[in-house]
Length: 213
Image 1 (tube, helix red, strand yellow):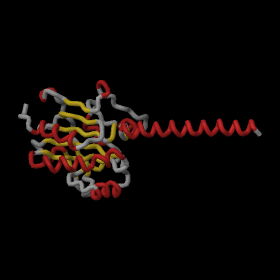
Image 2 (cartoon, rainbow, N blue to C red; image 1 turned 90 degrees about the horizontal axis):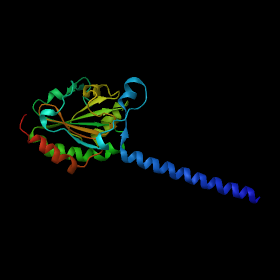
Image 3 (cartoon, rainbow, N blue to C red; image 1 turned 180 degrees about the vertical axis):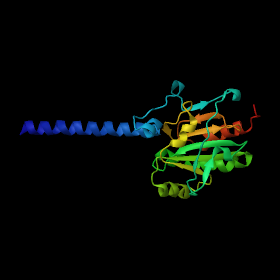
Image 4 (cartoon, rainbow, N blue to C red; image 1 turned 180 degrees about the horizontal axis):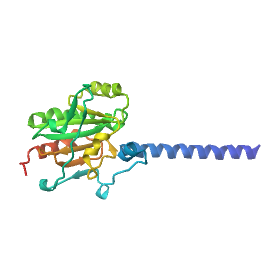
């Protein structure tokens, strides 16, 4: 009987240790954001994680003359079926491109901040464009927009095919990701994390104030 009790106690300790380890892993994953590798979507293979220089989550491309361009980024309008929306719809404007999914906790957390910065900067030639990814139920993604009172448009792209326009030069493997395109639609900054308004707005305003180079 004593041996059985000791065995049960050992099992209990191991179970508690496993639960603690799983909880710690969940916290790490949640803090890092929602991974969504484009390789896995495009090829059915494993997830590719972009590793930024020095592990940075905030990346800036300066001077402007050295910024890279993207391909034609366009796709179906999430809220208006039958309509297509594109970065090219915003000529000579700063374009803040945000990759998001309603399934992603950090995306839900940053939605009010993005809307706040959009409202504060849209009169200065700044446009926002969301790219909704991995939401195979369109109505749920639409509900996210309505519930969070998001006023700027989003491309509906459950397969993440539109991200091919970003090429291999810019990270697309972490959700949420936010890219800021300058007035010539070159990539000026990338954020590989959920944002606060005070993180995003000063960068948007700085890039909006640049002279064309």
